[in-house]
Amino acid sequence: MTRTWFVTGTDTGVGKTAVSCALLAAAGSAGLSTAAVKPVAAGCDAAGHNEDALLLMEWMSEPLDYEQVNPVALAAAIAPHIAAQQEGRSLQASRLEGFCQGVMSSGAEFVLIEGAGGWRVPISERESLADLAVRLRAGVILVVGMRLGCINHALLTAEAIARDGLQLAGWVANQPGELMPCYAENLDSLRRRLPAPLLGEVPHMVPFDVRAAARALSLDRLLG
Image (cartoon, rainbow, N blue to C red; front, side, top):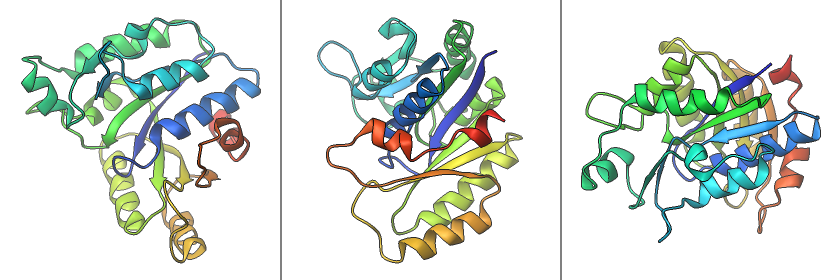
């Protein structure tokens, strides 16, 4: 049986891809076949490949082609709707849904759909990546960047997810930089206020160690 989650973040640069790779590694260690999709990526190399998408491919078990993992690769590392406009391309949630459904039907048991930036990142004048998550009816995993402002960002994101009719399935406390002041107090505030289980705390690591991060996560509440 395929289980799918949409991974979003409280902001850009909070470690969505790092945490997604750790989740894939943890699922693989639990004996599950895994796959991931980065439906829209802004910021690509000369070959048209995005670093985040390549990392997801490294940690998933299914042998998918790059174009399946990242069907829309935009050159400039800017907001997706602006990058698409610059390239004369039109992004639609319905089309992105089709790409995601293709991977969801590939046979993998654990599938992640990784967004770009935060929950309300636009893909056009009328749609955002949240519209894709709604179409997929996927549970949402929120990556909270543990830094100043994280409580406000996390609670607003959780409210938006609920307003869109989706379930916040779990959240991960990720440290994208050095330990923030009053880390334990901030974490406790989030645990008491977010309507979902904490899946784990990922410390700041240079270089980032995916397997160590995977060991810091628990998938029990996700997998039931």
